[in-house]
Image (cartoon, rainbow, N blue to C red; front, side, top):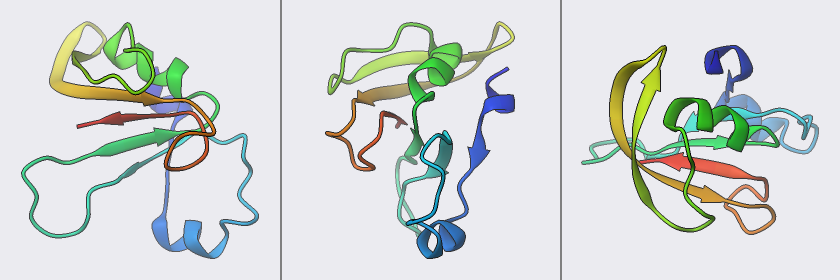
Length: 101
């Protein structure tokens, strides 16, 4: 189950401890700025991001290519999302990451 592998990032803690965070963690966090937005962006970042997110959406698109995917859990469709994959070091976090829009 993907939720067993993910740990939500705590922005206030991540900022203070960014130099000491264990870079083997895979985390997820809301990447949309506070306030009103038409679309929320969730970013999964870390060494297991590709493995974990593929359990939700199946086949991931090639790096830096957007693709629409159905997000599923236990065979139930949860949502439809635009999915983007980024490989390290050419990502916002410098780690492998996947974004759901």
